[in-house]
Length: 366
Image (cartoon, rainbow, N blue to C red; front, top):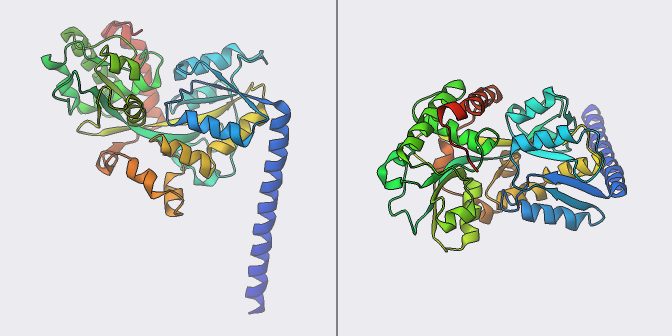
């Protein structure tokens, strides 16, 4: 009995000690970040994953830190180049942090562009979406879907093959240059998977063949699709992550009516990852930003923007997610079909798409 009491007391003391150390670390980190006074982000549109509210939440919690937002509409490859181009720049054009597609995390790590850091909730981030040493770590995911302007499209496509029909002439768009945009690259993977290809090189090849057929049929619009182009009728149908489309739908407020459909077949799930630039001018502010993003508040901020955050399962099990947020999400059936490609599969798909788009499809997306 005495032995059990001693063990329980020891465990309690260790837990309290660990908590005190964590609180001490956070206090030191906050002080250092406030002394730096600035955080420079890149490629964070406010209607992407609820980032507008997330950024405001960070600013409200840390008013001493100015958030400098660079190029909100940049793609993952643009973020990589911005870090490279500003290695020796400590000014406002040098990103402190990046939010990139899963395949870009290992790439940046291999090129020495990321600083390792493990947030205090590290253990609740699934092991298969993070670098063991903390160079990059999954933040959220969604599934590829179609956003459709119902004022212009009477019958919505329910699968990828539908998009080749004559009903959808000059209607379909990707969300960016498929040689650089992670979202566009993975939309092509989804198209390839819809034709039975396994994720990876095969999906890239099949996806490019599909896009070439669509372009030849006159159904592909070489414009970067977004909320505005959907509303204006320039791109009546856009393939994008469900969370982006749902946010755009809410923003349009029914003018025009916009439908979001997760196409039949395998649902491609796309994980994005966070990382801190190895050359960050404000490394402590960058670490504090990561702590905020992976706190309960930050994770719920992403969920409010229709993204499934990295700690979703752990927070659900702990009863930390309000029911009203869960009720706003699309039907679970679409997520039940979700396929999560590995880093290697995404890299193989990305290589095929980015290197062969010009020769196979030949449409310059603007």
